[in-house]
Length: 159
Image 1 (spheres, rainbow, N blue to C red):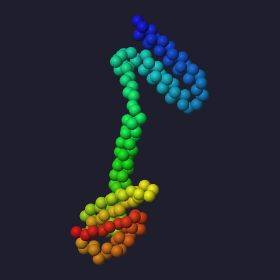
Image 2: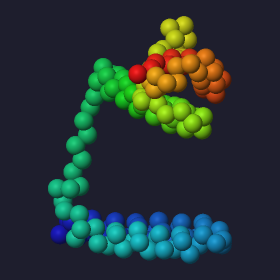
Image 3: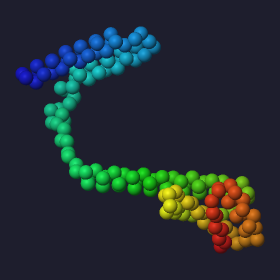
Image 4: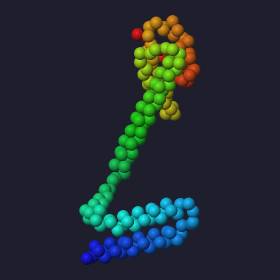
């Protein structure tokens, strides 16, 4: 019986809150959307005892120490750094392959290395590009054009 009273009281509070919000809402184009959102909210409030079982309403809040929080934050930062590095490598590989294709050059492989500059922590990329041996006489011109396009060091190898 107490659950029914609690549910009825919740419905009354929801109706009052929706009514007040409706009165405070200025007459604009969003009025229809607001009314629809209020209707859905009210419908969910009515159906909540039937849809949500009592055990599902129990929240178990865990407490974490500062060390746990720091450890979790560090893991998150490491994951973000690793994903960012992979995205950079993928994007640089795409740029290099597009440039080589534009130059009419076939490549065997492209490997991007990213090292951290110890002074201020900036990332310094280096590209290792494996080309066909027949392109070795054009080494300087290929390297110069790629370096100008990319703005960082390019190492060419031949197989």
